[in-house]
Amino acid sequence: MIKSNPFQTASPWRRNKDLIMRGLCWASMAAVIVPLCSLLLYVLFQGTHRFDLNFFRNLPAPVGVDGGGMANGIIGTLELVGIGSLIGVPVGVMAGVYLAEFGGRGNRLAFWVGYLADVLTGVPSIVTGIFAYEIVVRPLHGFSALAGGFALGSMMVPVVTRATEEMMRLVPGGLREASLALGISQWKTTLSVVLRTAQSGIATGVLLALARVAGETAPLLFTSFSNQFWPGSPMQPTASLTVQIFTYAISPFEDWHNQAWTGALVLLLMVLLVSLASRMAFSRSKQTIF
Amino acid sequence: MNMTAEKVSQANTEGPAQAGSSVSLAGESGKGDLRFRRIAACFAALVPLLALAILFILVKASMVCFQGMGWHFLVSQDWDPIKENFGAAAYIYGTLVSSFLALLIAGPLGVAIALAITEFSPLRIRGTAALVVELLAAVPSVIFGLWGMYVLAPLMRVHVEPILVAVFGHIPGIGALFVGPGTGLSLFSAGVVVAIMILPTVMAICREVFDSIPVALRESALALGSTRWEATSLAVLAPSRTGVIGALILGMGRALGETMAVTMIIGNRALITPNLLAPSDSLASAIANQFTEATSEMHLSALAELGFVLFLITMVLNLFARFLVWATSREAGAAAKAKAK
Image 1 (cartoon, rainbow over the protein chains, first blue to last red):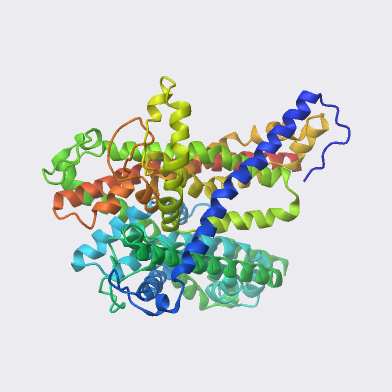
Image 2: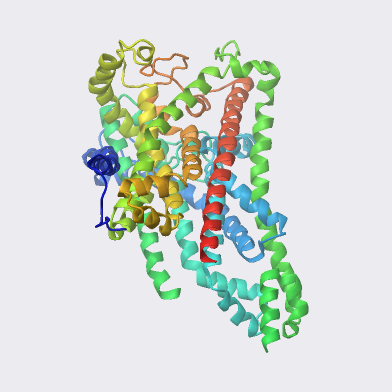
């Protein structure tokens, strides 16, 4: 950012120290890039062994039988994320609207909502799993997609709340005032002017939260559990891609390891594509609106 | 005209309760506004309710175990589901040591990379670097675990651990930390994997803190004849010390709660030993491994209490870190304001 000083009069020792420290900063970047590239390349290459039609079309097969897949896990993950967003998105968006439109000095509810949303983002996901177990699995006497979705949904709430609030605050005050000056009531202004303007930003926030929870394993282990068959009703144990990757990875079978790598490749592609696409869509819409 | 605009903007900032009275055109809308505000407030109230519910449920679920074991739970390392004897000390030890190790690796690296991005790299690549960092944060934990199990652990066993044992093994004191031969599934490997996972968090927050430092500070240091590094350390690192500590603690908070990757690589044997190359176990991975297999009410409750302990540790750290980050950015903001005047 700042070009180096052309009137440099530092002693050789100071100049060398400058070079060494800057070199160390760059070296640490290189040191981190190596394991990350290794991770991505391993997922990419090991993942291709079983990256075939069977993987996407078939149910898991018993050990030794060819052609097993994780189709049920892929659909199950989509189902769980769907249930999660049914719970997390409305609550998060409305809470974010409340914070942006009615929050401010003196509003004690808004202060606590914002503060506890930050606290909730720090709750370890496995703890959310215990919470969902106690509140859904125990009363219903069984693992279910509903419980898994509930766990994912409660993880989405604080993220979506903060994202919505931030995006609503970006909308220029002049737009609100123009709408109010036309005699449009406050609530209609909020919903059809402010929320409409911020919608692409909010959608980005929601998609990022979706991508994040789609990769969660810990809260699903004892809420949605797992299943060898196609996902059925939300009250049944349901397979998910992440739990299946975990089960296959810790199994002793070569073919299952390969499938775990392929599962990881599919999951990584899903998560990264959603994150990247939503970000790019947002940066384009940001240029046109603001 | 001027008056009306002022009133409208006033109504806008103060909420809809006043809107009905000040904007006479609105008429009926006052009621609708109030109703909308109430509905939004109901949804918003679910957020604090969720936080309270998590706390309440954790306390309630761990009650059975707490009544049976008392405070002994925190200091005993005897974990025996058959005899219903539960002590969390070994799990707490594993969690703290692996997270601390992760922080020891990720902390300096994260700060250095954040410096490389904000201070030493051309503007053009900064956006891309930020994007890559954010995408890395989105890589699921189970994938890090898979890589750790099949790539990192063998590498550790064959190459890294023998070197560590040969170099440090004979030094009195430090030698106790590296006793071989290891299996590759160890506290040390867990620390390395978690370090990679928390790097994006540490880096992102450090970048935010460094970016909030006014450019004028750096320029003044350079104008006084500093080298680039001296300017960075005087004008960027020194004033952002609190913020960086906050970033490190937030990273530590993430490390503590990390479940899947740790479960897959830590070896899952609860032991308290100074040897970093020995297998261990953590709070989160004990819950992940045992919860579905727990049959007795007491065992389930003991696992819930592990969760409660984990929850408390992370909450205390997070609140402290947020306070630190908030305090520095406020200071920087105040400094910028003073300069503007």
